[in-house]
Image (cartoon, rainbow, N blue to C red; front, side, top):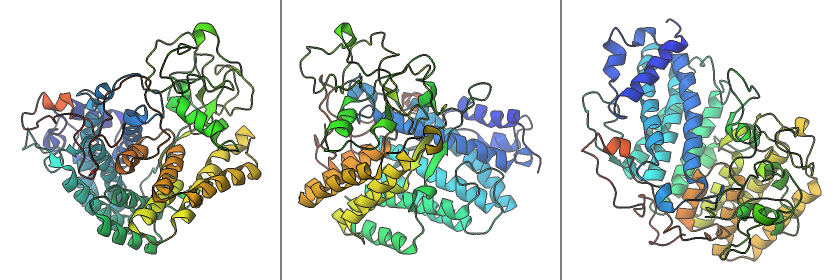
Amino acid sequence: MKNLVIKSLGMIMAFSLVFSCETLELESLIENPNSLGLSSASPNFILNDMQIDFNNMNRSYSGSVESSMRMTVLSATYNAVTSTTAMNGEWTSLYSFNANFKVLEAIAKEEGLAFHLGMAQVMKAAVFVNIVDLIGEAVYTEANDPSIPKPKVDSGESIYAAMYKLLDEAIANLKSGAPRPETDLYYNGDAAAWVRFANSFKIKMLLTTRLVTAAESKTKIDAILASGEYIQNNSQDMQFQYGTTAVVNESRHPLMRGSYTTGASGYRPNNLISYMKDSSAVQDPRLRYYFYRQTLRDPIGTELTCAGAPNFTFCYTGDGYWGRDHGDDSAAPNDGLLRTAYGAYPAGGAYDNDQAEPVTTVSNLGGDGIHPIMLSSWVQFMLAESALKIGVTGNARTYLESGLRQHISKVINFQSNETGHVAPASQVNDYVNEVLTDYDAANEDGKMDIIAREWYIASYTNGIEPFNTYRRTGYPSFLMEPVIDLGPFMRSFLLPANELNVNPNIEQKSSNQVQVFWDTNAPGFIN
């Protein structure tokens, strides 16, 4: 089969943007002599593009909820965050990805490329589950079918079931011994690693739905645990690795390049800074890896726009950490070279060693960071909640400690040869022991709060799991109240206007208070 040049792959993507997101004419890619056909398509090149899109979609999904979840600073209402335009890009990307999947699927089945197909199936399952978690429903069975120009949506529950089945198919394909793809951006052609990710994603799905499928979730999670085929240590993490190239083919982490060129973009959340800095007898060992201070002095005068204003929980947390409170929508002063920026983890910025230099000049990792998609520590926190709430095999406290230690180790050893900074073992042990002491003294609700809190901190820069956990459990409780009225906290996003405008078979939801199928908690459960 001929190799596909960059221009040809661009044709696939161009087609997916021209047509309505679900109605891309797949037949035109196969039969039209002016379009890319199966005979000229390279499965390796298509799979490469899907891998890049997979990371970009995960970042986009995460970014859609990070501000509401107080991981970045929200300066709009929850209605604005979930408006009819909020999911336009995510929706378009999903069905562009699905169009490429269908082309790859046809080639893979024809040429016996089960490894390629298995990778694609795992990624497809993940992105469809994520869109259901955000919106509650999506087009699936009629998606990208040229014979159905106006497709209907499927229920979130039916999509979850289909994606679980797809993961089973993916695992079988990955275990088939088929040839490896030329490029695997995540696991370097390790089929067993993809199987571990697929099973770990199953655990995520089963935990997410535990309010409606408790017994089934317990049984299936226990079976995965018995198999041992799931992500168990940091070396098995699913993450996207960025590079340090700044020109021609930009490869740096977007959070780094958005802050270290002309000045820090956005504000870091006072809520998280304060908790990591001041809530424990010992400072969270990850604080200086997450946040880089450009100055150690306090803001003065008009530099602190919230000074004297009512309803602010923090306004300023002290020690040179220039962040903002949840809901602070005041205009930003000229403080791009003063406000706190993203640090070494995971953005590939600078480790904070009290150097107090502007981001434009400070020594840093050059953007050589990661986007976390599924970490071993997260799996341990999932298992802690599963053991606590539905009796999954194992001890919730043990899972909690394992998750804490794994994530702290990942952060403080992140690019350690370059940063030259590792928090001492005594600090790590003191922090973990304090968390466990609090856990031992808590009732069941308090234990769930601690698990959710530590999972939240470990999820920094990926808001999907905290958003799901918050709707499922109501925790963590340390999330600050907004400083202005933002309206009721959203339970889901509205369907995208780009689709509604061209598809009369899809009807808009009544509001962002419509709950996804697995969220059975009462209205007003969270804020």
